[in-house]
Amino acid sequence: MNLLSSIILITTTLSLALAIISFWLPQMNPDYEKLSPYECGFDPLGTARLPFSLRFFLIAILFLLFDLEIALLLPLPWGNQLPSPLTTLTWASTVLVILTLGLIYEWLQGGLEWAE
Image (cartoon, rainbow, N blue to C red; front, side):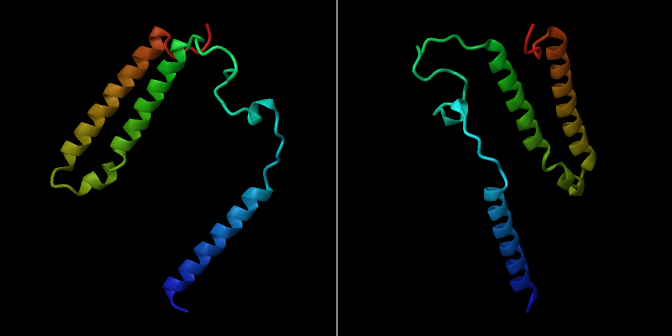
């Protein structure tokens, strides 16, 4: 058996085993919240004019910002193979410093406090 067919066989077997285990392993305990069509915590039959928490949106935007930062820094290891790796390191460090300063500012202003 050549290498390619053995790799395909191993990955297929492992994938099927993990898929079957994932269906049998979790305990199914449905409750009112899990059976609700909306998982956001709002009553779907109530009024649609409920006020949203501004802190929730702030935390969500910060999460998206730092998630984007990970995507920007993902190709960084390949940047060392460029003609000038020092320039790559400088730009990556600049992005990290700006984001760290923004996080420190939000922390000091109390923007990350979920409850007062």
